[in-house]
Image (cartoon, rainbow, N blue to C red; front, side, top):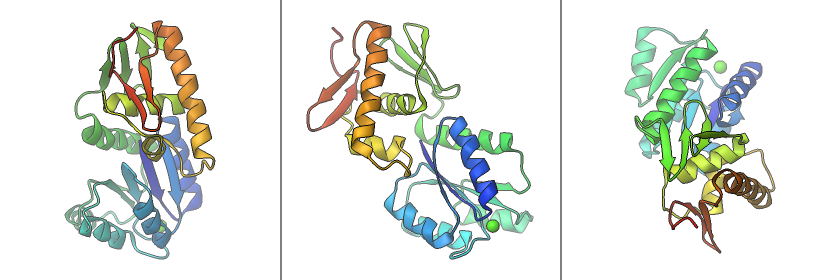
Amino acid sequence: MRILVVEDEKELCQTIAEGLRIDGFEVDTCYDGEEAWELIWVEQYNLIILDLNLPGMDGMEILRKIREVNLEVNVLILSARGQVKDRVEGLDAGANDYLCKPFAFEELSSRVRCLTRRRFVQNNIVLTSGELSLNTKTRIAYAKGCEISLTRKELGILEYLMLHPEAVISQEELIQYVWDGSVDSFSNSIRVHISTLRKKLRSALGYDPITNRVGQGYLIGGKKYE
Ligand code: CA
């Protein structure tokens, strides 16, 4: 799950990003409206947390542009503009949620979980594939009912594969969804994480549930385990 935080108060921006990373999300940050719009075009985010008063381009303008081109991304407005008319304007322009500053991080975190879950796993908080399960809320994976200790990246990869059972997922797609824009040597780094994930799964299950289709990508649950 990738989130973009657009907020020109740098310290607040980094605090939000850090909190969401602890919650298990991959987070990019941006302090400027125009730069945000460019990132939104180039990258694929599941959710954008959007301040309204921004240098470069106003948050409402970014939101309108997003909805004009029908980009399917959740937008949560986080703004000091807290009047009813502001909230109505934001929601009417296509925001999925609106939170006023000052706010408690716990509330932001809860709304973020709600928005990302609604879109990607509906009510199904626990994903399953064979003898594997993954609780998307607690961010814990289980093999045959026993907890497996996974890193944040490994968990992200597993989650994305489990959200698309039996589909071949390319490395590029995994990078888009699982990785921070800040990581530079993508392909090497993702191979390492996939490899450590597979090693852990093999050791927990006694077999490797992930299949590698050379030149195409990875899939989970698409073959007999043996
Ligand atoms: Ca601002």
